[in-house]
Image 1 (cartoon, each protein chain N blue to C red):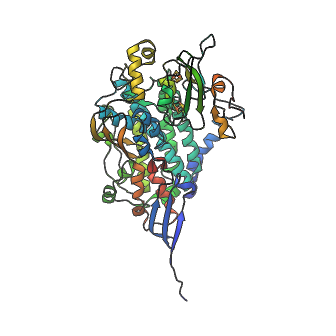
Image 2 (cartoon, chains in turn cyan, green; image 1 turned 180 degrees about the vertical axis):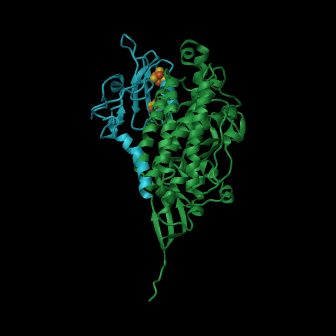
Image 3 (cartoon, rainbow over the protein chains, first blue to last red; image 1 turned 90 degrees about the vertical axis):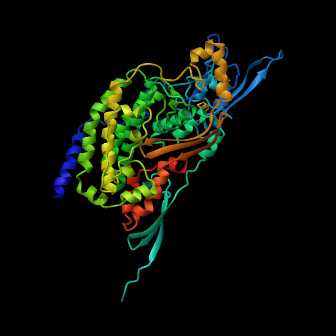
Length: 143
Length: 391
Ligand code: SF4
Ligand code: SF4
């Protein structure tokens, strides 16, 4: 009786014994995330190297956990320029709202740069210089 | 000589691996039998309802992801439908169909996690691995659509964030083609298995009257023989156009709830097939509505659109002054949002009716008179998630 049940279950599992495993062996093998993936942020620049951000502050306002900090630079003639820009990636919820609201395509999220874990939370607070590098795999602010 | 027996109090959880997170149950045992029990929830409380009062309506969407994190798509949908009802707008047909596709996929994926962990808790490890393999396919579909693997933030007030990506339909069709075979495999491993049946049949009885009196919802209610599904009773997002059945079971025990959920996966597949076949064309978000930000192209080229976008992002929309309750059928049960709107951009009060929380409250009734080892089976059959219960 019991053997009958056992055989029925084993018939399913034995069938799988000879198939290819579905596991991806992570650090040696890597999957390519889809285009829309929302990973590390970076700041957009114009081809000539000027930062696109105009310090309008929309991303700062929309960010639900309020992790973006912007301190605009006021020029002598009273106009605003891109000043300090900081994102605390340790508290970011990767919702993508900042990218969605930016009217200047100035803040973007990379689709493949997902390896930025750190041993220290402070190193996850990214300043402007780190955010300007899009491709590098680690870019936290060094103490 | 006589052996004296006394009642014993034991604590199960909050770090027990089979409590699906952080549930603590205080059990009063008489020998190995449960005389009384008291579930203790709240270890994962993050204050979402209070947070919602301090943010604009659209900012709360990613927080709903963190309610029932096994089925984030369904929570997104549920919340935006509540806000849409408040504003009196309706998403375009294509967006509604996409939301139906996403929520049914979410239902299958949530039920797969339930089956996996439920079987693992009772001792069937193979099922766990197989279910997670199929769930991975669904998560890949979600990932290519929304950009994230678990916290999708995909629905928007008035539609969805992006259109379906290229190749999505084919991938989904492929999944729907192989799924019945996989479902058959789970059935072969469990449904008629003697160990499975003796662990689940007649355990954790919740009669029809008790189920209604406790206010449980979802598969737990249907497992007690009540034919109730919000998708049929109060259709939303065009569910009235799909042809599907409500599975019920009169056994009222763990096994009955198991059969109901297994059948629900098949019904979800039916809905998905119909949705794929009749997917309408058109816009995926209500662009002309005063409550929805214009598209990026318009924002970057038209001054008026930029101003509208700025006002919506910074001050939020002007809602009517109203109170409203809106519920949808989530994989776990009836997820409802009660919104008190005072006309400003932020809700005055937002109450979340979490199905997990209410289903847990029926647990003492189910446990009384069962053995200690059955607690695990009952917990598995209730399928709760603490992100939602404790919110
Ligand atoms: S992704 Fe969301 S949480 Fe993260 S910085 Fe952007 S708006 Fe803030
Ligand atoms: S990143 Fe974009 S939204 Fe944020 S301040 Fe700069 S221009 Fe404005």
